[in-house]
Length: 415
Ligand code: ASP
Ligand code: MG
Image (tube, rainbow, N blue to C red):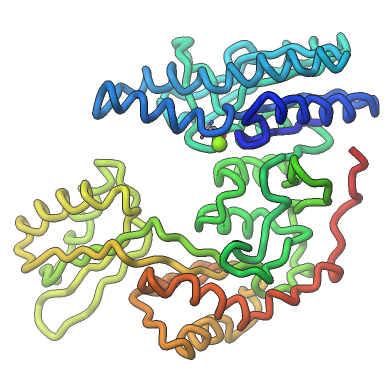
């Protein structure tokens, strides 16, 4: 069994003791336990801040050296707390475990997980505590897996150890149909399909690192998202058969970290979009929605979105390319937000988009851009209307009544 505890679950000594008791209780049922922990509370944020007080763009290798210390503190303290509870425990860093990654500092990908050391410690009856978020590359340099990367550590260990299950303990008691702070009647999902969870996670429902969901899907690791503060069944993330997709939509998400850029009057000829988006890609700026409008003349408008954090850099790059292309203007709008619905059932149900647009229209909420995938529809709207939009769409799909009984989750655990 692999359990992962996030930063809020180990934010102080008392919480670490609480996690220790939970882990020991599981261990006493006779199951070998591997625990993955994140850095305490906001440690990672503070370390990043500290680095930026020293350098505006700190070398990534040194960032990894710095950030990985956060998790090392948590594992040592948790191992001590478990020993105080009378059980045997040992803490291990990513390097000690043998989590081998590529060399892309701050967003490394796991390539291999060696299990000998863990298996040896487990065979000695010890609880193994592993530092999340970190690995080691071919040069034996420390790498980190991107923000929220402890989730991926847990999933990778669960896959490599062929764990019976992978439990992700966090400060919320599961995945909801919408952010309960915005929609009080939002419901906890009993289960959700990998593909749905991936969309939800990428769209701003920050419960799991998207990469962890992807990894779990690839390796068939069943994930349990649960609260470390209250008892409850949580949400199970797993493979779902088409027959189970009776639920057309499983959630409404919103994301405020969005900004819109419009390049006005770009020439309508081959290669233009490539030139523009290639320039952005080279600076590693992710572009999300893209729309190209058709006009009467030999020019078009290109509209796209980036995260708000990337807007200043994106604007610089785009302005240079726009001059080159002879575009007449570059406009930006940071006060937009994205509202999305997710559900694998929409593949086989017509009228889903119409229902979403209807809910927004009723509120007089204007849509700037629409984008869709097989299981997702996103609308870009004014930021000031975003919470109202989420509530209206949630209501339109009657998600407050989503019947959790219709498809039971797998057997509940007793830990
Ligand atoms: N401590 C890292 C972060 O805050 C990794 C994690 O929490 O999963 O991003
Ligand atoms: Mg975290």
